[in-house]
Each structure stands twice: as C-alpha cells, then as structure tokens.
Length: 155
Image 1 (cartoon, one colour):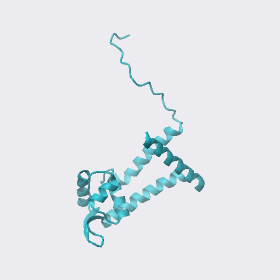
Image 2: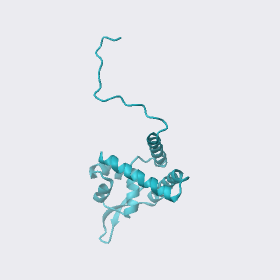
Image 3: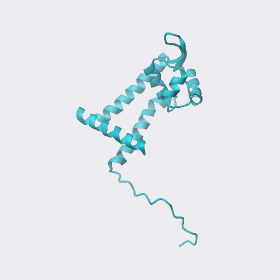
Image 4: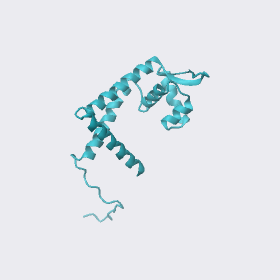
C-alpha cells in the first residue's frame, strides 16, 4: 500500500456502459456515421465544416458573407480563411447575386459536383439506417431522436 495520500474525486465513479445498450450503440453509430460522412470530403482535400458552407450556398443560391456566417453560427472572422481556401480550390466564387447584383458567394461547377457527391453519401447512409424500417417506424425514430436531441440541448 502506498504512503501517498489517495486523491478522492468529487465525482462518483462512472459505471462501465453496456456494449449492448441502445445509447452506447447510438453513440457508436453516430461516431461511425460522422467518419463516413467525412470520407468524400477528405478525399477531395477539404476540411470538416467545408461541407456546411457548400450545403448552405447550394440552399441559398448565393449569399453574402454576413448571411453565410449567420447560417453557420460562426463569426465572419472565422469564416474568412475558410472562404479564401475554398475560393483557391475553385469550390466557391465571389460573384454578384440577386437583382441588386450585390457582392456575394456561390458554388462553382466544381463545388456543385462536390455537393452532389456529399449529398449522395449522406443519402446512402440515411438509407442504410432506415433500410429495415417501415415509413411509420422511420417517422417514429426521427421524432424520438429529435425529442432526445431537444432534451439534451436543454441540459
């Protein structure tokens, strides 16, 4: 036995999670799905988070930097280096948008092709998740996950 004083934690010891518990499998599935979603991104020399820019610009059909930063929930100072890198890689371009021809951002042809690959990968993973479920059970699972996420956001 050591003569050094034993450190006591203020937190109770956490029990080992059951490898077969639903929560454990949900966490494992989420981590593996996240990795799988990153594969086509990383294969194209892009970084995590670049896909969010690509999807927002596709949905917005052009946006200014302030709106894009707001949609992504980040500051323009954080967004700027990402935009410059995506412009250098010919994924987005600065161009006039809207009837006023205001300065904005839009996907290039290459960016649109990359978005299609990313979206197809997302759809394949979602299909794999729902493959054995009826439409009714799909909706139930989606509602249950939304409720669970909402509860965790309140914590």
